[in-house]
Amino acid sequence: MNPRERRAARHQPPIPEAEAGPSPRRRKAPITVEQVIDTALGVIATEGYEALTMRRLAGALDTGPASLYAHVVNKADLDELLIGRLCAELVLPEPDPAAWREQIRAVCTQIRDQYLKYPGISRAALAMAPTDLETVRVSEGMLAILLAGGVAPQAAAWAIDALLLYVAAYCLEVSIARQRAADDDAVWVHDREELLRRFAALPAETFPHTTRHATELTAGEGHDRFDFTLALMIDGLAHR
Image (cartoon, rainbow, N blue to C red; front, side, top):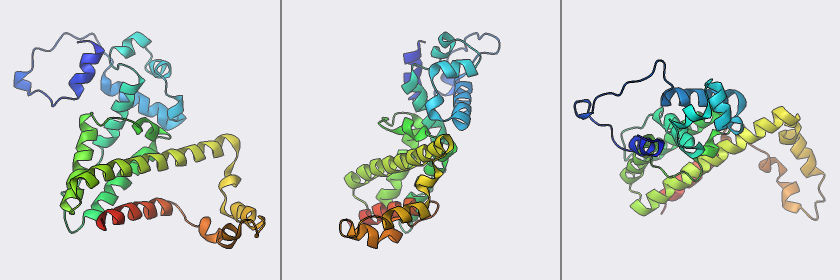
């Protein structure tokens, strides 16, 4: 089976063991897809997503690029495997019409927390078609929650796309900000007191609203803004 056929096979439901053909002979201590994923996540956790290249991954696996390409087609295929692994860790609730808002918010929060464990990995989820079985499992679960809450199918479908896009973008921005702070000692750029001083120094006649509402513009701790935006999006669905 060539790499492209292998990639396509991963998108199909598993074949029952009784129907599977005989196992091919394997060389001693072969590199597996799971090992590739584990190693790639290790690189991202310590060095960030931008450091993950096929060459870097092959080096971390102590193998050559040819051995790596026997398991993954290209970087896009690797990205799909990585996001699929993170999705496999998510716990999806049984849809409850009375608690659908809390449930969909909880799923998005789980995705956020998974992305933030691996700096910049949410970039891999952008513009990705949900074909991996684990990513489809998550979108299926989110769709079931929204439909149970009475959201129309078309609105639910587009809402899932919007929610996942927001979560990925939020996590990517957090990762970029943390990386810049670490590399450039630029923590002061994101310091609230520094921002307040900058806004206060603006000419009030030119920026009347910014100077007047500087406190509101710089407010928020932790994931306050994330929680606010999710609530805004979900409440908007409820009022459609």
